[in-house]
Image (cartoon, rainbow, N blue to C red; front, side, top):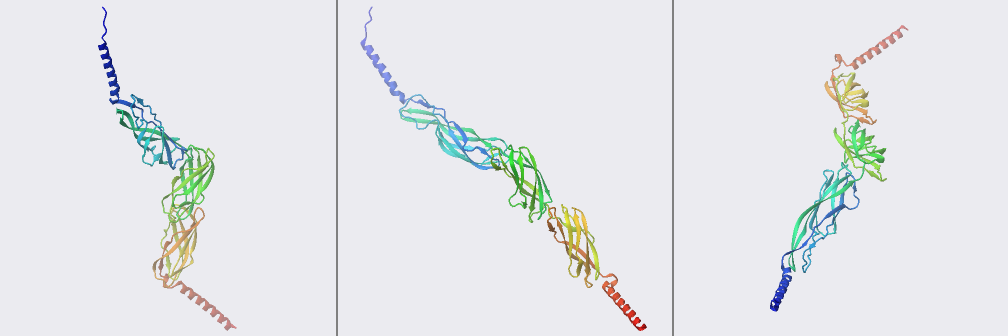
Length: 436
């Protein structure tokens, strides 16, 4: 049996197949399809320029932030237009730098830098304060980037895109390094007789707790602001100052007259040559130095009696109530009417704290002086440990004026005796003349 052909059926099938193919081609662009898929931005960061800093430094650092994200889009179907936003672009970016504890403090708020396309680099600047106690070799500062990026592009029609964005946050470490340095630590400070208005000495023991070995080093004592402690000999050359070494320095200092009995600050710094042959100066170290008031003297002896019309020898005992010894002391009394002094000065020698010394004066009260206690000024002049001559504040001395002994002035008695002697001599002279 032979199968006969059917031309009508074959033609109809071909027409239907052709229409189905055309409908797929026509309807495909109008269907909702995922057009682009990518990986998003990626970042690196580094300090621009010199990346070594000195402890105690206030500085501004510039950080270069680079977007290394690639535009690795997967195109599922090709539309008739291309998207404007790229998926490796970080949009509306804010960059903030965080502190590294108390050692490195960031003083600048996060900054808005806008869009960062893939492959682009943006500089951002931050003010930082490096602590003088920052002794580590390096510190990591977290750099945080907050941004949006295009995650998915949906193409609804051949001439329209719908963007889907994601919010993202990345943290990139930024490394800063500390320049090897000498760091001075004062482990002992002993003042020698530092008193208000005089000179003295300050003895220091200083240790290098930094990682650097300094050569040709000098330790400088510096005035701290308006502190009343003023260095006289301010620089001591010490030569090599290796890490861990301890050295002793002695400085002559002056204390101004407006100081009081308290502790005042003084600074020191080390100037040295580092391993690169550069002369640098370390960060300042501040210490407190106690200052004593000038020695205070008081009279501890009983009030001496001075008879009227009589030249009297009186003893006045002084005590050193200060905290330091005084040397080559001399006492002086300043009398006033109705009392005069034929010997108003007395040498006392050295007086240690808490010790006493007695001065002897010769005074004369007028015959008509009013009886009772009267106050007279005295002063003590002394030398401090450096040999400077200093006068004390006035020290009151009490004298008790009393009537003369027996009610007759010793001067009258002396006058009577003199008259009697002269009379006796005249009588003897007359008798001799008569005998001739």
